[in-house]
Image 1: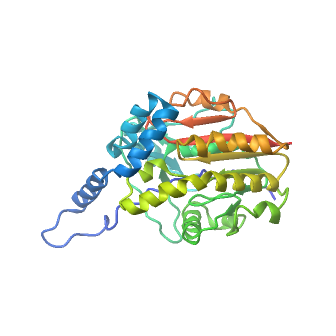
Image 2: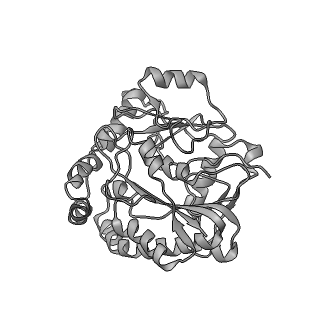
Image 3: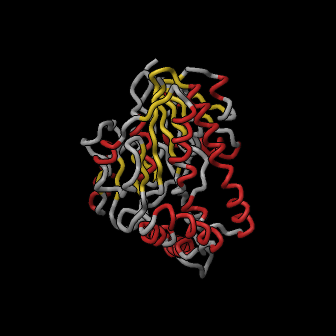
Length: 351
């Protein structure tokens, strides 16, 4: 069966709760309510415990670059939101509106791989286009996301007719989507309902297997595997509202690299010989990024690195990358005017 091109992994950006409701007498107008809620989000407090931890680690790992990265990550008013159009409900009117507002396409034809239907609009100015709510039976026209989250899908280079596994699938969706967590699995299904019409949804398999075991259950079944692994989401953790939970997260953080390694081992087992794997995280942490990939390359004789430097070069005007990485990997560093990431991407091939 010929399958449609893969959908990009997305980051959620829900509308503030109650933003669409009329206020009580004497309350602010709907537009004011939304502005106040967004303002409240922008003024949320930085978790000092997490910031102190990151300060020690990333000053060593990133050197002078950490200062500018930290300034963006700790300033939500600097953050940018990309708009990924839904190929199944695109409108020329929406695209015209985006252009008038100063948005432009993030990805163009110079990329080694770029599906014609993939249209992701960005603006250099920090702004947020109104989000669309989930409505049963109605497709969304677009999705708000961090533009860097599209890079793993572009690196995977999915082609028609290929069997694809998205090992840790929520919140986006691809041909075989596996999500072990119940809440994230429901989130995944809702996202699919919002972006994919009924006939095509039936072509997608959704499972709730332990990703560490899926390679044993489905050995050498897939041409492409995406491992968007659980990680210490730097951007989110910096604004942890519960200090005790933040401290616990930082303790458990040490165990994440082991989980990521196990997921990659499982993904390699699930790949057919000649198949490709893309690993991604949304953290700057070397322990969860290049260290995990290097350990895989040392311990698995049947995989080899794949050069993705041409892809990085093609999008270098829109993204800032860490310079001292290998050709098979990239790390997106947030900076003012290009506040995308953090996003680590690495590509491997099974031999």
